[in-house]
Image 1 (cartoon, rainbow, N blue to C red):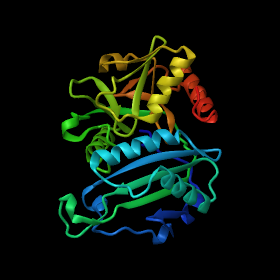
Image 2: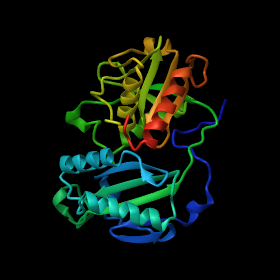
Image 3: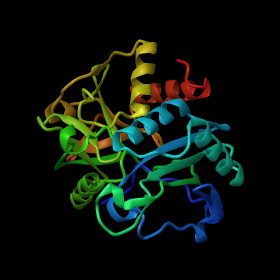
Image 4: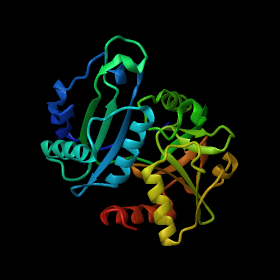
Length: 303
């Protein structure tokens, strides 16, 4: 059996052993970067985050990521303590400290801060927030397309934990990924509450059938920025794209399948539940979308 790979797999880069990490306004060598064991993010998963990608000195779709970050902060009632300019300045300070110009990935994390006592109530987070920016040199590199397995874990209703919230609380997705790995796959394909195909544990999901690109309605998945950009470039290029309910039967019969995410952009899928999708290799429409997406990034986000 082929070795398991992940959608965030990249080339080893020795420079990452010496990165500087931004914590609450101060840069620390990675070996000295620390947060408190009383931090609400560590203790309870009480926080929000964004992943950003650096291409040729520019953070791709930065305004979209900041919109989502501040919307999430409002939803969970966390005051980030920085305005948009402050967040951008912190990103730039961290980028410059690490000498990064391209092929870098940033994880921007905001928690409610340090708790006075180790319990749940938000009022106990009396010192904070905690803001961390972790950047790595990274060139995505997959040895082969991704294999998926459908799992019993679903993306649920917004009154439990809204899938559109980019929160630190990822246990549902982690359990889904474990189930997929136990089944011999790389990542989990998750259904929605009605049994329609939705997303994977880490990425948004697309299929191609008879020249049309399909993805879920978006009701139960993360409002992925790369997902939205793929839909945008398809429409601009005249590629039929539909946000709709579809089943596993339709998925198994797809000509192509791919995942979207900030890190890997468009990641091809070769197999779902032991069934080969198309040729098992990246397909022509996925390849075309990759080219269109690269052009969009290079243009600064103008299709």
